Image 1 (spheres, rainbow, N blue to C red):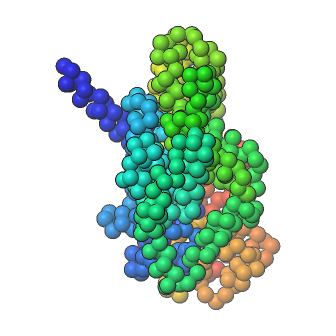
Image 2 (image 1 turned 30 degrees about the vertical axis):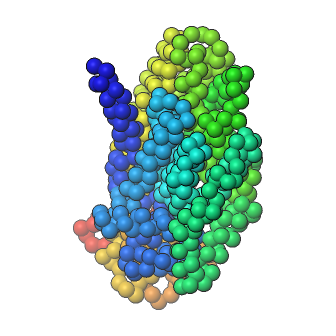
Length: 568
């Protein structure tokens, strides 16, 4: 029996890992490419395979100078193995997400305990932002994977004074640098320097700087040297100056957002663990007399990493919701470790932290779950018109059941049961998104179908593209260069040229060209578009104006078998 019990623990952990990773692999090809970002990372590798040029990335047959090439190379390999399709573009990201879970789990075992490691794996796997990155932003899920690996090997190198671990940390940082540039170096470097200065327990000699820089250079420099020899500064300068320094120091790279922007993002995208993490910080404060968490490797390194990421991107002039994702793997470790350590949880008593922090946090989560259960049917119905009842009310039943179970366990003072129930309910919701909801919204994401209808009509001399609709996935589906127009005067000139022009634009823009500029346009198809803004949910006029239309400047017939009509 003891032998069987020893075997059962790793088997249990493996089963939990497989279950938590499952939603990331479900129906990878069920939805078309997400405009705009996913399209860039799907099309650029396809063009690499088409041209045979893996050195200088291109998109729409133009240099793609914004990012290093490692993301493109990984997706190109997936295309080579499984064919050029949406599922092949997303499969590497799913594996990267699973890799993040593995590194979080290994870090939890190294710093704390098997139970803390298992909880941290579940928490990171049920983090909404991680799922979004894996499905829509491959470059950022790869960055998260390499950062998680860098953190694990750094901690292992510090804890065991392991030369091999330090060198692997440099290697993973270099791979992150080839994925998204200096940020893959800046986050771990800033964390190590800050923790070493604070704890005074790590010398520069132990960081293996010279061999580490050699390893980093061997991995990261060859592409930069080769692309410089091939194209000069065309790829390197815009990436380093505009995409990194420009985003940090200037406002021109995105919308202006205030200093507390990430507080709301953290609470929403890391929910429900964000609420519990606040209680975890209260737990650390309660345990401050027994140890100083900031000076220890187990607590101080994850805490400083998380706060460093938050502070750095708060200071950045350009703010995007996914920028702070690198703090989530470290925060789940802190949360899991406090849950694992606090006696109020293991004993199920009302003592200590339970009354002051965990119970209020769990009550807040239960109330929010109940509010979500009430609001979701209306939101789903407005966002996806015609949705069947099971899809409209399914999440509400899941949230309601979770709120009831949570309330029951709160009354019985079973905090770990509360956490387990939350994890299961959130896992069910994440699994339902690719299994049921992405197929349901696909009719409102019409680019793939519009391009499929348009493809047989195109001749080499035709011009095809979009006007202010931001649908670059057209390049991927049409397998040819397109125009991307945003200026009305230039679009009018293009539409009035003798060439046959096909264009996707919004209904409101079509009305503008026809009514205000007297341009003759023939509507070949009209499709509703997925509602992405809350204000559009109840505004039927705005919804109609945002519908996408496929127009041409010359009469074209799809044919009687398609059911589409031609209209001036």
